[in-house]
Image: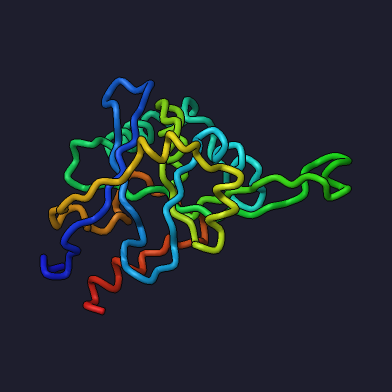
Length: 202
């Protein structure tokens, strides 16, 4: 892709890691960086997000990070390294609501959130295990309010994780399909509409 097809700048979120030896932060960018994609960035509480994700019974849920294969651990650690030229994309999720278990749920008095990862489940779980309290995810605009309701980070997180603007080199926009966090569920393809449009000149 020629440099003329690259955006002049893009937003980058810096996420602090409180329990990680190799580095103390990661950088994340949006998946849907084109105008009119109808997706939003939501800052989420890591614990709340994974609690909702563990309720998903329609998709695959990963084992705890300490049970991963050493090669997978090394791959995701190297992929998220902030010294890399390429900036990783933030997780992409969907969210829904269902009745809570038990009598209260049966009476429709209480509901709970259920999160499914379209892409980035390894990233999200690794960040949480490395001590990230909050991080950004991308979600369709029609689900953004529901995601904030169940998983939204507090106001101080939104202050701490304000995105910065950077002028990325062309390598930052290489196809992320080759990265180490290849956690797309079977039969489900992560959306790369903006990247495809840029490559085709649309």
